[in-house]
Figure 1 (cartoon, helix red, strand yellow):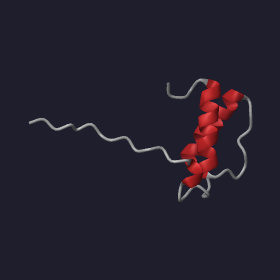
Figure 2 (cartoon, rainbow, N blue to C red):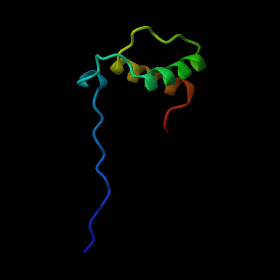
Figure 3 (cartoon, helix red, strand yellow):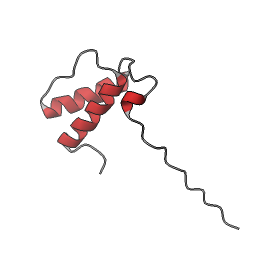
Amino acid sequence: MSTDQTPTPNPEKDPHDWVTGDEPATGPQLSYLQTLSQEAGEAVPDGISKADASLKIDELQERTGRGAA
C-alpha cells in the first residue's frame, strides 16, 4: 500500500491579513529590500511594516528579474 507523502502547500495569505503584518520589517527583509531597491534605483521607505516590505519585495523582484519563475 502506497501513501502520498507530498506536502500540501500552504495557501498564500495577503500580507495585510498577517497577524504581525503591522510590526516593523525584519532585518532580513530590510537587507533584501535594500539590495533590490539599489538594483531598481529607488530608496527603501523608512519605517516600513512587515506586510508592506513583503509586498515591496514582490514588486521589486518582478521588476529586477530576481523573483521566482
